[in-house]
Length: 141
Image (tube, rainbow, N blue to C red; front, side, top):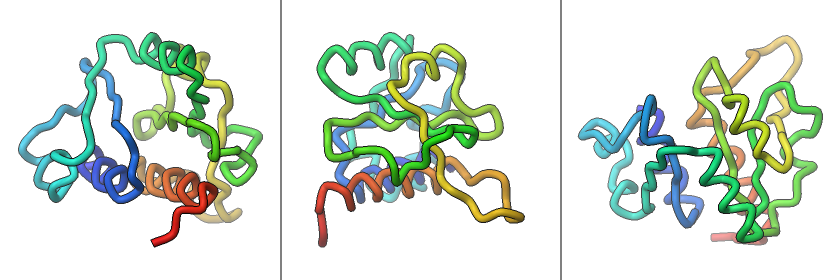
């Protein structure tokens, strides 16, 4: 369900593609497509064998790689999303894998209220990051 919801948020935010590990990750199943409500046909979904290598290739193309991590010092409102950016989200509970984290140019967190929950669902986090990028780029309507 999370991948479908992430694809739906990605389509709504106007992203160019969603890249995901080919192994040990959700693929485009019938359930994912149903939850995505058509977004799986709008946003290119790119499964890759080695995510860290794919992120390095993006960096070589001038794309800034931002990893979402709850323990990051910077919060997402301190990140410049006006430049070409790839946003990397980890698995629920486990977060970003070590190699993936090391490839990121910067880590950022969603500032959560003290005394509340410690983390958010990955699809919710995706939506927050994507729409902050959209807001910074001045995209309205």
